[in-house]
Length: 364
Ligand SMILES: *[C@@H]1O[C@H](CO)[C@@H](O)[C@H](O)[C@H]1NC(C)=O
Ligand SMILES: *[C@@H]1O[C@H](CO)[C@@H](O)[C@H](O)[C@H]1NC(C)=O
Ligand SMILES: *[C@@H]1O[C@H](CO)[C@@H](O)[C@H](O)[C@H]1NC(C)=O
Image (cartoon, rainbow, N blue to C red; front, side, top):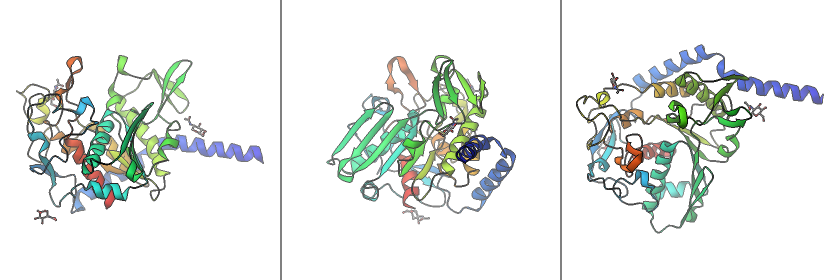
């Protein structure tokens, strides 16, 4: 009996691991239908809109624990207009962020961002937005390993950030570092402790050479040296989605931060004559469309989330951020030898809007 039940348990686990790669066509067909419906029928799409100037922004002008890479003003950025834009959806209004309400609602809770430095960017933005509501509040900021924990002590609220660029596991083996496209076993326990989770992953999937933190890929018992990175990203997202579908939404709310766009090619935003990168940009694009079109990784991400049985809440920040060629640190981030940054975002700035969207979804 004992042997039988443990072998059927093994079968079930094996099925869970393998199943993301079955029935792909059917799932994709459904995902496109769902996408199509939500675009044509929805009366209020918070993600279609324009940037409008609003003097009541930004939410904060200083934040004592802001990391240097996002602290554009103290790094000498001369212009300030980029902080004075509000995202205006076409058919409705986005609720203004209310930090006091947020702190009260989430008293005693755990919120965790999981992802790369764009996740760090949004985590810092949220902690600054909350802190600036109540600058006299007691807080601690502790870093252990890859986890940063910001605690609002008066509210017993933890807002954490777990560095995890690929979401799926990377493990050491005798042959080197293996990227396991079919496992989130290494992190799921940490994630499941939280009331709210906000994931992000994309930028590291493109790294090669010295910046690539794995030596080979493992998938379904097979080892391969490398593969198309967008395809690998899709498989990893499916693994994550299977895990997220197993989470009780009444206990843990699961979000995914849409792909954050870079501005390294001015042709994409319709200024082919300008310096190719974001340097010197002081204004957003004022329309609602981006000449460069949708981001390929975002297309994959939307497809996978659309195919989930309990779809995670996708913060579709890609297009609204594509319009913000003015929002990056450029030389006012780390600067120096690390050079031009048209990937991350100045704070205060664009990630504050991502958190307005997060807040709007949380209080719905
Ligand atoms: C949005 O806000 C504006 C200005 O306060 C108001 O005039 C408008 O009716 C609001 N629109 C919606 C859909 O609530
Ligand atoms: C994940 O964990 C389960 C249960 O501990 C194990 O059976 C399975 O083989 C693991 N998957 C991978 C890909 O390591
Ligand atoms: C910039 O974008 C344009 C249009 O997408 C493309 O044709 C061109 O190759 C890109 N340039 C670089 C340097 O990537």
